[in-house]
Length: 433
Ligand code: EPZ
Image: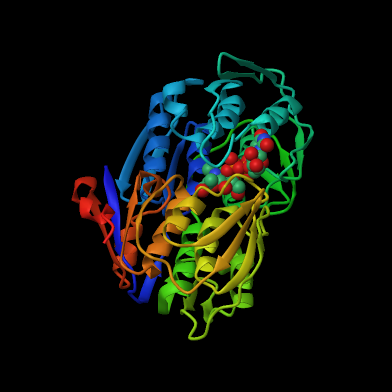
């Protein structure tokens, strides 16, 4: 196992870039199953989740090649309809295989994904959508069985108690593009990653209207062709670096991004008084403020609201912003696994239901902390950048699921951060001085 060692107090300056978006690449990989022709995907991030999805596609029978580190060539000629538990359980996003398999093969047999640390992660809305397309939906022994022989286009409402569903919208979309008739998805997710998937499907010959809006109209076609598609920049990775710049930056420039996807974040940082210079829609320069920031309240919402995937990172920033800020998590109400670890570093945060009440203060102190999920891990790295002394982040495999070489990228702009074998963590670290 590896750990991340961070020595706080360094200043981050220079240029850092976002890689391609994990949450676009995963459904887009699944979408290659919709055609027997070759799909070439560019700007794919180098992440363990991507490798895992590639492994599942190969298991299903697709030919998968990687001509270069960020380009993948996938040809789903003859494919099977069943994805087993031992593959699916390791990555929730494999739920996105259901739509394309049901669309192309008219049947699918996929293990239920199970939950993860940020919540139970149900898929009832996905199943409701498939049933809305006239599919026979059976759940038995931990597997979902779909029979789409009689499927046809229909109006479908995909809203739940937390609003829209990102992978639910992707799933129904990928089934509907090859389902005869017209499907209208109401309360569709508007995340940029869903827009990216729609744009790729249209390139493959799909007929989709209302892209980027909560109402998606899909006219089913008989078949789809291959494509060459470039994945959009990862707004969550970019947002993580923008928050890093707000905490420890001196003219830190974040490039290869789409700021229009991050309006909710930049709006909040502006309210807090973070010095930002927008260079273009693809580049922003951020610095730590000379004077203390103002505490701000944040409520997470589906896009274009404040992204739940940036909530933990924002908690780190507010932990070192004097004053009281309330961070409300509306998408995954239990998504506070980072809080006890930030408390180990001295943060003063109280959880009241879906609210984190953060009493910001000047400084944090380095400590050994435990990563629990992808974005909580990022929040601990950010806190380590400004904490006094050394922070050791354990279980960083969580981080590697969604951040492409975050340690290399941060080190290149001045962070004192190293990835080490766990045995290098000195026991003395735990002895009280
Ligand atoms: C996607 O997850 C992302 N993952 C998540 O990113 C992200 O946090 C989430 O969208 C919200 O933006 C991928 O795209 C691979 P949802 P998804 O369906 O699609 C409830 C990361 O860190 N719900 O939009 O699984 C659900 O429990 C990851 O990169 C149902 O109740 O999220 C949640 O409360 C973490 N029934 C809310 O809706 C359903 O059938 C939104 O979930 C589906 C969802």
